[in-house]
Figure (cartoon, rainbow, N blue to C red):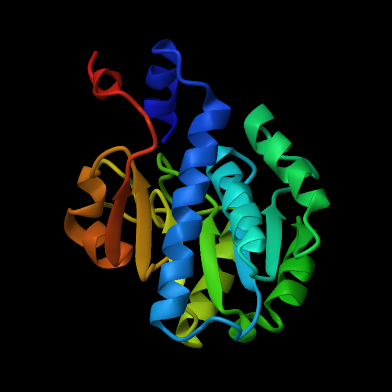
Length: 221
C-alpha cells in the first residue's frame, strides 16, 4: 500500500489513521474466518509482521484481536529489534500494554524455528510480512517466516494476508519464491490487479476490499 499511502498523505490523510483502519479491517476478517472455520479457542492468533507499514497493519490487528478476547502472538520478523517506520513503531510499542499479546522478535532461523514448533496449534495465522514490489528470491529472515506460514497452512491453519500475500506483486500477480498462499486476503481501498491476475488470484484466496478512508483522488496522478 506504499504508493497509495504516499498519495493519500498528499490529501492530508495521516498514516497512523490509515494504519488503524487497515489493521482493524484485518482483525475483523481474521475473526470472521476463525469463527467460520471453528478455530476460535484452538490456540493463539499468530501475527507475522515485517518491519514496515505492512507489519504495522499487523500490529494494529493484533491489538484489536486481543481486545476482542483472542490470545495473540505478534512476531516482528526483522534483523532489527525495532520496526523501520514511525507508525509501525508506535503500534509495536502499544502492544506492550496489551495483556493478551505476547511480543516476540525473530531475527534468525533459530528463533523462527522455536516460534514454529507449535504453529499447528495456532487458531489463525496473519501474514503481515510484506506489501508489494518484491522480486526474485526472498531473503532471511522474511524467507523463513514465509516458509513457516506455509507449514501452518499445510497443517490446516487458515491464513489471512494483509493487502497481498507475501510476496505476490500487486500489479502483475507474479509471485516471488517462496510465496504465501492465503485463505483470505484483506486488501485496502480498491481491488488490486495482482489479486485478480494469474497466480495472484489463486494465492490470494477470497479477497475482501476494505475502505480505509483514502479519497478516490489518491488514485490519480
